[in-house]
Image (cartoon, rainbow, N blue to C red; front, side):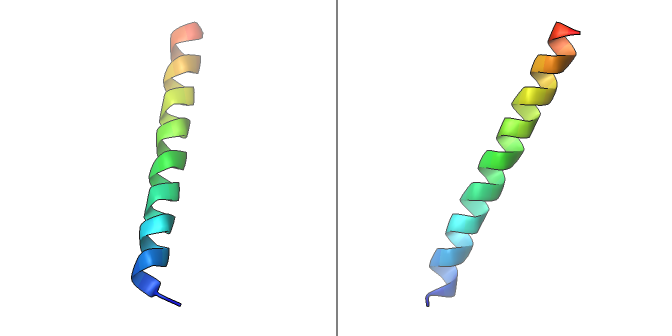
Length: 32
């Protein structure tokens, strides 16, 4: 198993989750 490829995928997933959480927090902050 190539660790660098796995780490790139994990980094992309973490960035996507962070972006989604950030967008949701901004949306709720704007609505309320």
